[in-house]
Image (cartoon, rainbow, N blue to C red; front, side, top):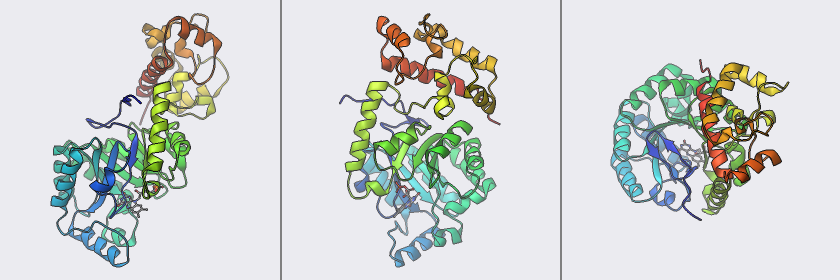
Length: 368
Ligand SMILES: Cc1cc2nc3c(=O)[nH]c(=O)nc-3n(C[C@H](O)[C@H](O)[C@H](O)COP(=O)(O)O)c2cc1C
């Protein structure tokens, strides 16, 4: 299969494909990561300060695997060096009770062109007792300050969180406003529905996690707005699951040109699905969704028509006289398809223009 460009970045780092290896303490080091078919591997979680190192040692005594190094920085530096010679981008999942070691690691990760991941996710009582992991989400002021300070180093930053601990939408908005680049969302029992809510409420890149075990479960996350899916348990025994998902995602991207294309709005799609909606003339969910997004009908029409300078302007015999109003390529339509054929306008090119139109529509949202 040719090299497929997924057009993916976190901060200024290009990520080769939308599969992410999620951290598994004591397991996901560089030698494990390079044996897995992913674009980004979150190494760690590493414990950076005295309190988290001590907590990790307590966990080891209880039989849990941990990276409990007395001096984590040289180990992480070495791991980043190993990853640099591979095609996989390295992420560093880090726990700390204080900001200083996070700034130190951020500078190192930035220098090595990786991604830093602030761990606001771990829920072992030993970690929470010292103030690390998921309890960070219960202190939005501290979380915002840490994100802001870490971003002063210019490191691309993901924040790993677990759904259902606090108000997930407010949490995601806090992370977005503080300046993080991505949210790594362990969706727990809330699944793709929560991904959609966060896609609609923020500008964050979304790494969707939990129970992705095959292409079907990955596709559900993608079609609700995930930019990436991450996998931990299903990647432990072998690379087979990752290889299978990657092959299917590549093939979908090659055929359709938009591997995480949304569903239509009337089928429960996220706001990117507005790109496939008609003129606002019918009694349909479009009106309600525009209102929820804070986009006026006039603005919606203006953004759609701003694409009339592109090949989407063709299609005078389609329902509304141009393909800016046409639906997703996977929904058959003889009128649209006859124009695509006559113009030698490929399915991929059509969907990539629809993707650009979705991005323009999202920028006209009103995010308070
Ligand atoms: C044994 C084990 C260790 C884990 N260690 C970490 C960790 O250090 N940091 C972290 O952010 N998540 C950690 N996780 C959570 C996973 O990254 C992931 O969020 C969770 O397992 C759900 O994804 P899955 O359904 O693909 O396994 C760990 C999970 C397991 C099973």
